[in-house]
Length: 455
Image 1 (tube, rainbow, N blue to C red):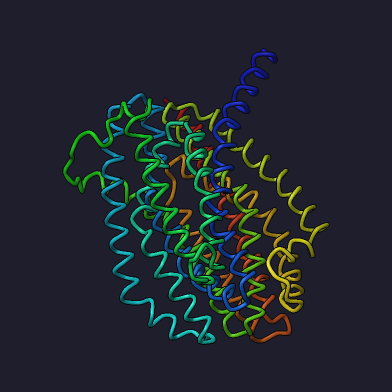
Image 2 (cartoon, rainbow, N blue to C red; image 1 turned 30 degrees about the vertical axis):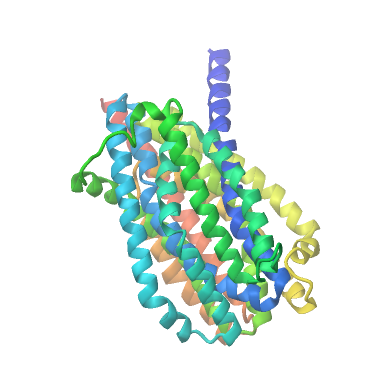
């Protein structure tokens, strides 16, 4: 009996790692585009770094929130596969692609109407405002492909072929870095666009990723067997309702989480350019480290969703414990890196001594994020695998917008903490969220076990 349990445990670990590792490489590779945008813009000038920081602070919440809506494809497809209903997969994916096109159009229209007035309201230096505006205009040419790819990737990952999306993304990263180098600094006869060039490079890369992924699911097995692009379907508002019913709470929860960090970056505009640049540099590196628990979260959505669809709730619970344990182990490793190489990490972003010291200070706060994210983020993924998304949205709303933001603003404006007050507020909100969604997960899993026993 013991040997059989050990064998089952080994199989769970092996399967989880098979799903997780390609997702991790993919997330790191996708984030590498934003990472190199910020890093290389900072080498151009502090104004370029600050401009890209402000532009990213506006774009990232929009992208992550709306792509979060589209990520509803993952738990839906995973549960269909677990339940043996493969024939229902293609209609869901096709409707997801239609929805992606609609969301891209909404973003483009909204940006045209609100971008310039929004930047005008901010207390920015004229050059920083100019760079932020044109960086976002350049990114807008990549709206359609980035949202279409979000659906295709969710479909591929839900089937368990996470290595495919890893390869697609790995191909695009060197190209993005090359385009950044050419367009930011002006090489091979191209003009030096500074931070704006980073936006142009990213938009081009988005189109390449989309065309590669479309070719893969159209021609390659097993994806071609689902006939995603081989038949026309009318828009189904019934399927849209299902997608939005799961996706909107996911997207809103992600938007609330990401936008609070973005809003803090915007509130930093009341400080000088050096503080804005240092905050963005530290947050950029902290977000890079966040890709580890985020990847674990995405893997948990797939494996837990599949097990829940197959009504194997014990396996779903084991996957959750495995994911949280792996995230905590990596948080310990990241803490060691930040503690030993604080100055070296800050030096990656800038040579300016003032920005360097401020970045080192902000990086020290990132250590606290590592441990809280190591618990909260995998739990997010597990709950999505259960399709339990509404409660997470409300808990995120309370933790960030009722606790983090007010506390951080008071500390930043009315105490000696200054800009660091916002970081303290964020850490407090993440702590509250971590505790609350942990309780939610315990309740959900106990209820599933009870229902399974009754059946």
